[in-house]
Image 1 (cartoon, rainbow, N blue to C red):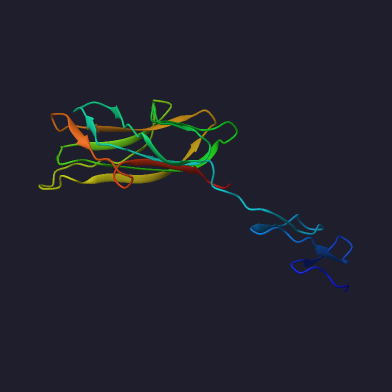
Image 2 (cartoon, one colour):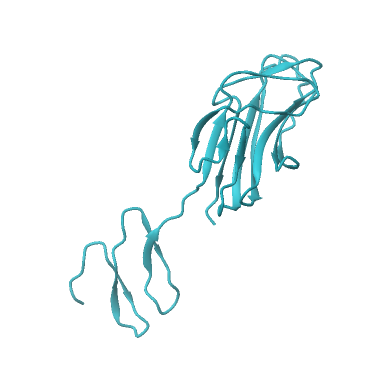
Length: 188
């Protein structure tokens, strides 16, 4: 065999002759082209688009009312799909697929019979909920959180909603680790 370039890989063509696979760039992965063709280097997949938003200041939630959580602070948003005025994320054009979504809501100093955050798709389809009954005495600062993998299409709109049955208006807590909502597209 003839000398090659550092980083090249030797493969064989359809006739069984040795061939050098061109060196890829840093971070590239080797991809098979199937039987009879040499592999090639290509950029690896990325989990985008993605976003993560959180509640910037405590929010009062009326009892027995389905209320959109006012997520007004973005940690990041790779496709500018999250709207901090409506508190909703729109799946960008051409980015339909499977998404991992995550959310959490922490209540401030109240113990309701029912405390349920949930995620809606297009204002009607429930994608995820985390029922948290506050029957423990002294469990006033509990949070409900979770994640799910869901199929979403371009143009779908998702948002976080909270519902409680304390009997009066109560607050949910702000902060990136208390009340948050995020998602990213899975590599398929």
